[in-house]
Image (spheres, rainbow, N blue to C red):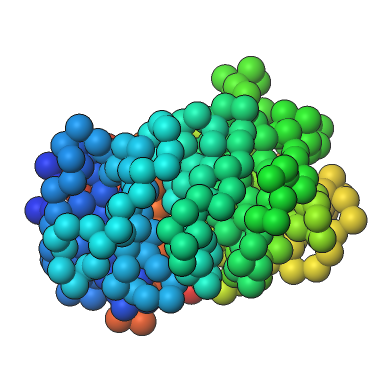
Length: 356
């Protein structure tokens, strides 16, 4: 069973973020923001009421200064000091529609904000002004700077486009349409998903900076490799029976967490597929016809699941959470990794993760 962190919200939690000191931030509907002591059993460490007419849709801690927290609420971005949750240190009002995702590059110089109009506003945090305005043709759902490459970022949206950007250019370096990429023969659609378009909901970049994952409405997870000014699909597998709302590479290596509208959280190890350059995603899928038995956790018990010889890539762990997943994050508590889950409820669910 999950450990529940309660008492921090009265509304559905929409987003989560963790810093290097074990502090967790959660944002909810109606402007609610709460800080939690992760190592202290999930006790609330502070609360702030932002404007009630705006949902808190994204949170990200500064990679350079763990006490600085960027939060989006409505079309606004507020920079907060978590040591004293009062008035924002800075406020940016540069997006025209509701912001869906924030990302800060590792030098803490640029902040990217993706919104419902498809626009990504890139703010120079030193000069406090917009330096780039990038665009999707539909809602931009997720954006992420690449580690070790502070001028490079990737994005995805409900236009089914995945894009690679460099801040020196206003146009994308490379674009892929999820409806056109991948191997249909090796990745059959599950029942009821055949006509479900791959609207892209979430992406996450691995710590190496060259590998990133994208989760889409068709239930599939796609893994891409960046090579120079373009990227290619390395792997595609059926992750969930409904849309993949969240993907998250864990720190270091290629362990990937995914959360779906089917109420499941899955843990994947794709290191054998992306650890070296693959020539053909189709050959990768054909080679991975069977894998070691996966595990499932339900009701607090860890059980073995028989491998499916046609499954290709199988999750190492399945958590039957039971609620549509809004956000996932990862935290180490007392030497053990945990996955934090936000859903339609007002509490944070915490599950232990095995060592792979």
